[in-house]
Length: 122
Image (cartoon, rainbow, N blue to C red; front, side, top):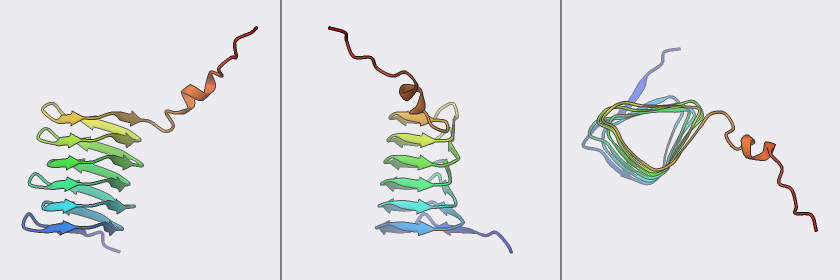
């Protein structure tokens, strides 16, 4: 079985959801949700306006929306991300722009649950 990368070139514009299973390189404009169990590469000319939910993502271009990845999120030096990140690991290169909040690690919510709140005594 050969692994192939699908490419949406920089002259492609899509309005709507995109679903794919393996690897995808987007260098065009997407307005809508991007969903996959595979890996996404956002090219230098790309603009994605919408949610990104994939296994992993590498961003060279611009994303306006929240990113949820099971494994790794990489923001390269020219990347611009306006939105929140939830990822297993996060890598941000010098020069990248990130405006939002990040939640990194397996289950970051467990720390809050481990300290039970006590009711005040009368």
